Image 1 (cartoon, rainbow, N blue to C red):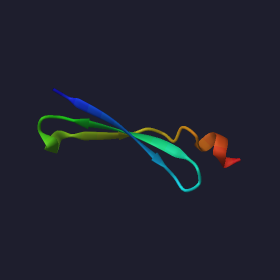
Image 2 (image 1 turned 90 degrees about the horizontal axis):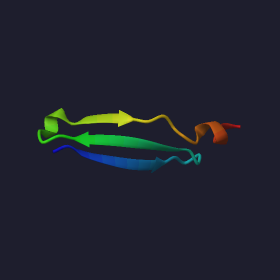
Image 3 (image 1 turned 45 degrees about the horizontal axis):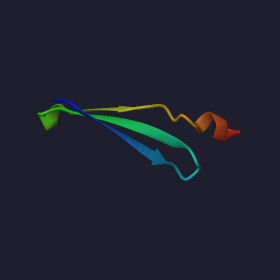
Image 4 (image 1 turned 180 degrees about the vertical axis):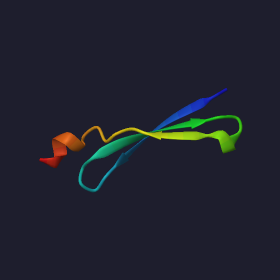
Length: 45
């Protein structure tokens, strides 16, 4: 059974991004996908 974990990080400049971690039964096959910062566009200007 696969387990998905969504982890949110907050950056010092106020930006945030989500990391989706997919865990398989064999931890050596675990994959990580990093989502694009979803608040960087509104915080840059």
